[in-house]
Length: 73
Image 1 (cartoon, one colour):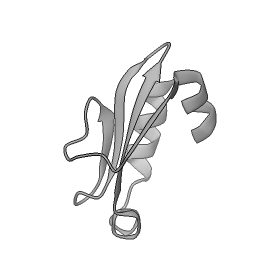
Image 2 (cartoon, rainbow, N blue to C red; image 1 turned 180 degrees about the horizontal axis):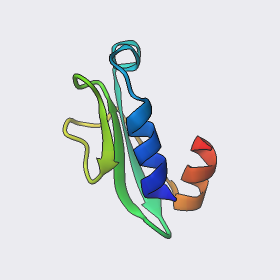
Image 3 (tube, rainbow, N blue to C red; image 1 turned 90 degrees about the horizontal axis):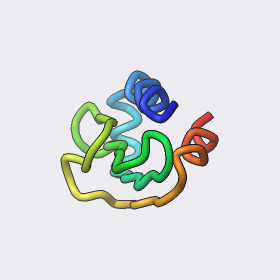
Image 4 (cartoon, one colour; image 1 turned 30 degrees about the vertical axis):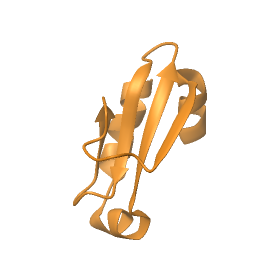
């Protein structure tokens, strides 16, 4: 569910979202599909996925992977 959520987030990104948000969010997730994930709404075009963000995160959130999925659905 976490990887699918990030796939949907990546597909919904636009230059407008990046321009308006200008933030990088890092998620430290525990449980199934846990690990470090990110949403980059600062770098041209934006990106999202597994691992550390390409630039320093502005916000780091720690939560269970189940709570992350609930938050974005």
